Length: 243
Image (cartoon, rainbow, N blue to C red):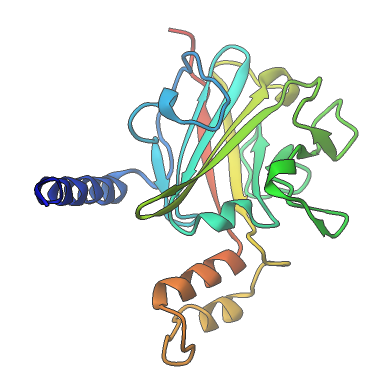
């Protein structure tokens, strides 16, 4: 009982601090970050205490960084995390020119939980979907690839719910970009939705009612809706110069 007396206020303080930071964090990352000894293992302890931004469109934390060889991405999704590893995975488009169209842009998607219409167990997520990257002709490549594209993920059950973390590293030479250059990117989470909903369809799903769906809480309904609706955002990142 004495432990609970002190542990509960501490837990509430941690949760409050996390929520407060999410409210203050930028929606889109604004700073350049030089990567120091980033290890692609699905753990985010080498990224600092907090991610660079909390994106409200995708309900996730993320940071982008680089060194002289790789572009790195770290993602933490603790709100409706299932959307990040549903059938659509997390798809990152990258452009060396300012644009708002993803057509023909280099893109990397992970995980790929459905192949040839069949679900792939989490323990066998060994493929990366790669599109429109020069020199790579296959759309599916192994996580153990010669092109040195690296991915890692981790799913942890915490007291306040599951947390999904994901790391990606792409060689700069594959993207044809250099230090000091500005890139433009789109992060797309398709969840389990087969296609993007129209504005009218999205509006119909915007106000879930537990009264109309007995047996489900509002949070559960919001999670199911979030998992179904496609969400995306655009941002730009200027590659950091070596300190």
